[in-house]
Amino acid sequence: MDTSVLDKKAYLKAIDELKSKSKKRNFDEAVELIYTLKNINVKNRDQRVELTVNLPHPYLDKVSSLVFVKDKNLASELKGVVDKIVLDEDIPKISKKEAKKLAEEHKVFLAEGPVMLTVGKYLGQVLSPRGKMPLVAPPNINAIKAIVTATISQQKISNKKSKTSVAIQTKVGKKSQSNDDLVDNCVAVTKAIIDKLPIGEQNLKAIYIKSTMSGTINIEAIGGKKWDTQSLGENHKQKRYLN
Image 1 (tube, one colour):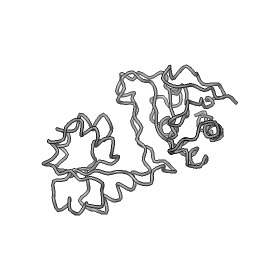
Image 2 (cartoon, helix red, strand yellow):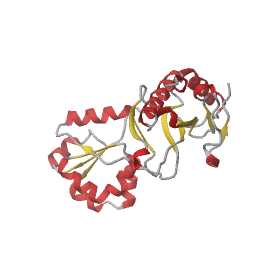
Image 3 (cartoon, helix red, strand yellow):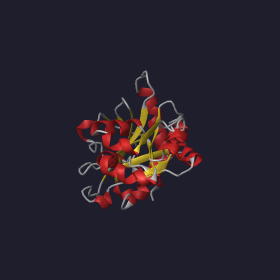
Image 4 (cartoon, helix red, strand yellow):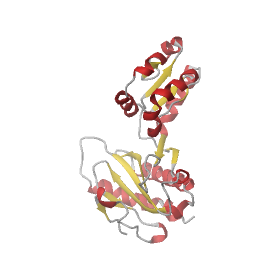
């Protein structure tokens, strides 16, 4: 592998510029990486990307969790442990609009084994495309706590929802984090994506970095060449990143 794509100096330089030139906001903006791809047929499901990366430096202090349960004793024990509890008898009553709201509000979804089929039947069309289908909840409160805690450092990455886009966009941190922490997260995510692509680094066309409200900064290319700044199209403000 040409290691320049994992060169921490390139990310550090881009992050320095991102922070120094973007306006201050009254909220902590997310920092995102955008990868444009080449030699990929996104209509082929086998060539779409879906993975979970453990960030070295999580940007969340806690995550919101939801558990679907059948056992009312377990439901009682879970109070104060998770953010929302949904009994199996209430699942068919959840509208599509309500299901979308749940998917937006919660990061961790768990379900007792006997409830999994019910969740799939009534909520699968909403939760599955969003990567929110629940994991099987262990019958142990401490084990459930451990799953929720571990999720704080996990970042899900996917382009499976799109049959046309040859780009992957993902959060890697918050602007309030140190530059070194953001660099470590960027490198971890980039390495994980390369490992998942069909022909690895050769599928990468460009890498951009941005914050929630900023334009994009084009990170230096593999092998010292400059990335193609036309990769993102008209939906993103583009800023050429030069050495």
